[in-house]
Image 1 (tube, rainbow, N blue to C red):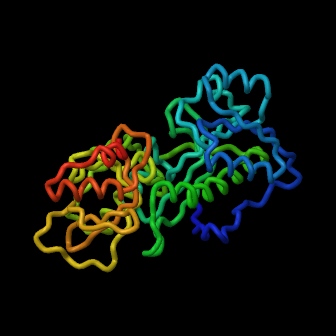
Image 2: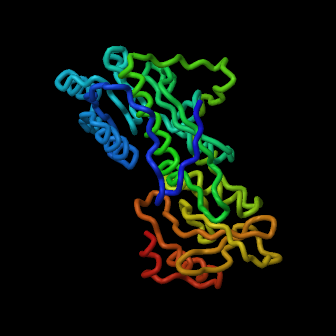
Image 3: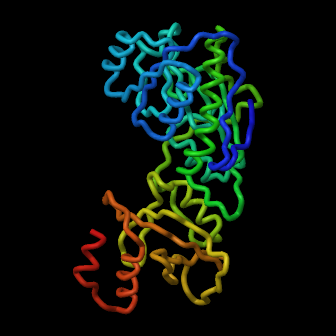
Length: 325
């Protein structure tokens, strides 16, 4: 297992293995649910190595098989794919199908980063896995780990960890896997008896798993909210009785304890963010809320109008209510 520390986004260097001597470029099919930041980066990195890359938005297993039969790729890479690969594809060992999994070796399941942040892991990683009948249980082509720890002033969220540390580790893993393939090397089986394999099968994280204990200090509350930011968000009911998904949690470093006030009390507002009381004399800022069953985020300044009106015992105006519907 290799470990590295990604640099800041502005000065990140690309991490590349030593290429195989005089290895010809490969014909690669990139299959994905969405051409997101991970898919785009891996496509560009593979092209920068001289490989011929065809991007394929996954539609159906039958369509994937037709695309493979028509285009005859030498290898398939799935940088962001949540659906199962058909057996006609993963059983064809002559054309390996590689899955980019945002988890350490042995980790399996659709909520890898969520659990890592929720459990306050110190390190995490990305593993390049051979597609198999069981999701995330195939042979291992490569794995890279990185530190999750950041400076106290740097917000750590699920989305930021994916966009920066995970993508850097994935790029390194894909390059290493392609180099192995060009040299005729094979992946190793997933072996939980190895001391270095510390991942495990985890279930999809539910909202009940994301529940916040507001009696915790603001640092832990912010970390819990960050583990679901930006997808799917942490659901909580605020003082207006409406359930929202919470985003953009930041710890208030200069906080004066409000004696007598319950935790989860809205204490104030600044620049369209609201301050919420947590345990141990601390508080956390929330920058955005999304009403449950709504597709848009709501500026918390709008919600603040509703909350303060309710706290004063007055009814809200139709204009204010319509802003959050």
